[in-house]
Length: 503
Image (tube, rainbow, N blue to C red; front, side):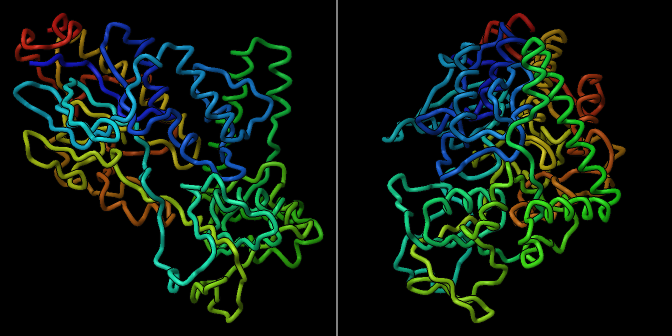
């Protein structure tokens, strides 16, 4: 029998690198590798190359809790974030543990061997490979890397210009002096308009409905001041705490008193739009409350400046048909276009598209319950990272990685090899809710039926509340009833050294 690793991490983006660093520091005797489907590291921050690509969260919360962000801008561009992620891997010795062009097609839990058997296609020629691991950690994100979400626009095939999706931006695309229409109103569209407007002849953001937006400086003056007078780690921790508390405060207030948050946001929008506010506010007045969907961040007023200066504009309307050189709207208006950018969002998927089975039988993910938003009832030794929709993704990725290390150490101390979240008998009648609840974004609602369900009580709630989860995870009782353990059946059959010792 081939060697059985302690942990395999699938995905080498922000979450995967962070998890590997936590494992190396907190579980130094465990054997693990990081499998990356692509030929380069960085995940999202290597894949997306469109003009102006940046974070929509500040880097003091999007950054790792163990590596200070030391750049001048808190709202960072994509290349700076990619550099930060790769630096982290190098500094913590993760580079040698990464294996590229490893496409994990399926994973089968073998109950007799008490391990996951991964079927992998390697390289461009898709050479088959089998890998075994006691624990599987999915850090593959939540969207398909192959393609983004693309609505079926009538007349799409007759457009004679460039029709592109930001997820796969052509390196040689020349938009200078071109008429560009960006379809969408999310973070990508909001980023693209000011970036493209610098060179394009005409830039239009065509939205079906408005999105809530908030403007913030790209640089955090207090963070820069603290870094100048305090040790880097102290300054980073204080700024991270400040920004985390602000995110929490804004989200909670949006849920409790949405009318007051609406008023606050409108005030800021009018200030940012200046003299253009009177004619433009219809394009910035959503029909839903703040944080019913994710809020768009506008750094340094760049979007509003482009509108004020006449470099870009927003049109709120529905598409009737794509024409050979533009778009006809249901209002009858026509938008001319040399380039159409379909910033229509991501195509979500669970577990990076890896097909999961238990003893050869496909595992029914939607029928399972989400244990603390990380594991699946009835599925042994698997944890999946899904970040916050109302705060920075990495806040939860760090929590999940730290929790995994604590769980592995607990299992070693206990002398067990398998842990399976199991619904307690008393909860058979628990009311199911969507994995992500109280969030109306279309890209989520389209696929929630493929995700596990959450319940109405701990530990089956996916709370999406950082401060609550930070407290719960730090006080975790790993012997709670919902976690069922099994001892190692046969330590001699190819198990790794650490699990031999645990048995």
